[in-house]
Length: 207
Image (cartoon, rainbow, N blue to C red):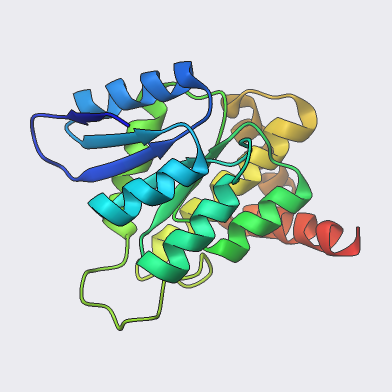
């Protein structure tokens, strides 16, 4: 575990990824953006670090050897009441359904560069539960966060991830497709994203 401290003291974030290159890139980029960064390359160390240092937010890779990002997220939510977001190369039906069930503040689909991740982290910090919330409530579910815009952000990110994964699109291409789908249905982008994610969840439940 290492700690990198940015200059502006924006907050403490735990980054967990079993790819050391990805981990180093994220750690450096977030530190440069002003965050104190703790890192771990496996789920067991992540939980130990979280218990000891109580970060303000965790950024978790999903698929790792041993404990998965989902395992870590469940522990952070249930035992430490710490908010988290996911970063993953996968956006299949089961993954999307699990992300929503756990109540992540955000869900980002790789590949992403640090210039895309930092704004998402900043938004997650803005939307995280406020200190002093009733004990035992854990993380607000994605469907009902304190900030109404947070739900839309998460659902849109999940919808983009589904399209990127299913059609091998870049993020920009996925957004263009989602916008086109919304225009064809004559509905808002957020509503189209919600319908897409719900359809994926139904597929996951039926599999």
